[in-house]
Length: 152
Image (cartoon, rainbow, N blue to C red):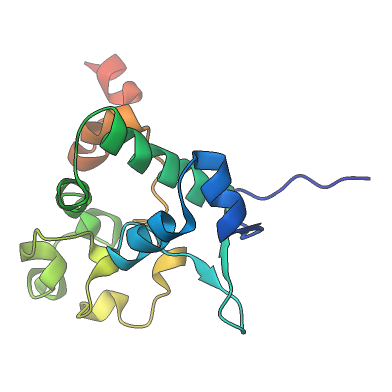
């Protein structure tokens, strides 16, 4: 009896992920180094990836190869996600967090974090886990979705 793989369950090695999206292992490591992806690391330091990670990496590849967006551009796009909207709204903690005023990378890639995120594992954070379609990033950034269109 087979069990379906959970979407966020880290079950793929870096080599498997690299093959699935058609890049070198070093490319995946570069994306990690740039803060675009957060792999799960085992106790021995082995990187493991989930179906979510696979989808995110495939999106990143499409942005680079089909849209001509470089890594810095992708980091900037991810930095526009209003993380405070997912963390209880804009308050003093959010206003003093580098993610609010720093547009150089996504909130999960910042070294200094606000109080709300200090103890949180970014891989588990709902901001990092936002499901988005690569061609609909504005819907994530501006909080629009198909349901919003239907209500108008």
